[in-house]
Image (cartoon, rainbow, N blue to C red; front, side, top):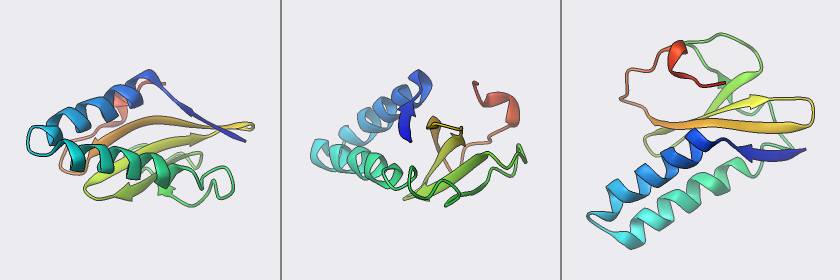
Length: 98
């Protein structure tokens, strides 16, 4: 099983990096790397995260790190990362691009 980062998820990582880098480029790089590292276990443990409450589908899950929700979908041959959103964001099911 492979991990696929969607374009919106990659954009989220860039935005997170750019925002944190205003204060510390070193910390910004570390946060983004930690987020990427957190997803590396998903091919072996795809059910690790909890179901995304706003959507309620068993195959759409999330794991948390720092103040971010990493939204992913379990597919037959891949883990598809849909986005990385801040926990304070008012997230709705329609916000998820699939």
